[in-house]
Length: 295
Image 1 (cartoon, helix red, strand yellow):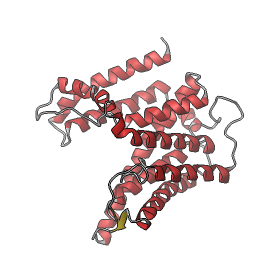
Image 2: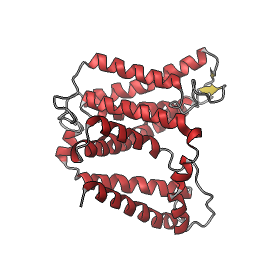
Image 3: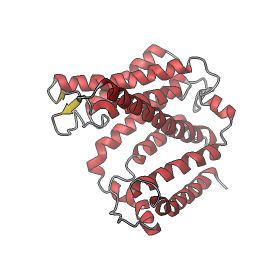
């Protein structure tokens, strides 16, 4: 059986299993039904991806997660870079009057709690998403399925972008959800794509960001680079609303508080990537169409 066909069969099984379990867990967990369903799909997908690629110690070495010197420094520098890019983005918005500095009236203890919560969530999100998209998906496309590097980056980045909008337009779910409500959620991505014009800037922004994350992976030969950059951005955005008030409505240049749906943020992330490439001055690979040996 071809790997791609096996992957799709596995994904269908994951969705159906999640659809069955979501109504059961809804009676015990204090979360919205849609969130339970989405989290089940994510958890089972990561677990299946680990099994699908047969994650072993050598795989982690190939991903640059083990046996590579300077990993902690790379993670911290990348994390700080992600936060710094969005800090600059906020600064420009304040300078041009589209936002104001308005820190929340929290005491030192509460600020510490918020920072720890944001950093913990950012590292978890950064690790899980980058391991799945830039690790498993990109690695599988480029090496397991022999897709050339450019095509692998494009497919991975598009998948990464679209995956954020699977529940953009979810159907109404009553207080007693059933398996059939889960099936209705499965069709939600198609409903979301009907609003493509509405979400196009966000899709494009995440696609650009995904390509940059892939570029950082190829430059550093380690997932710690994209994990750090991704986590730094999530960390900043989770705290952003505590010290910034956005005055202007969303527009194509400034974007919104999401930080990835405006031309300015695309320019800043693109500039960072070219600066990163210039500083690193490290060749991507010695063999055309493959990721670096350490990835």
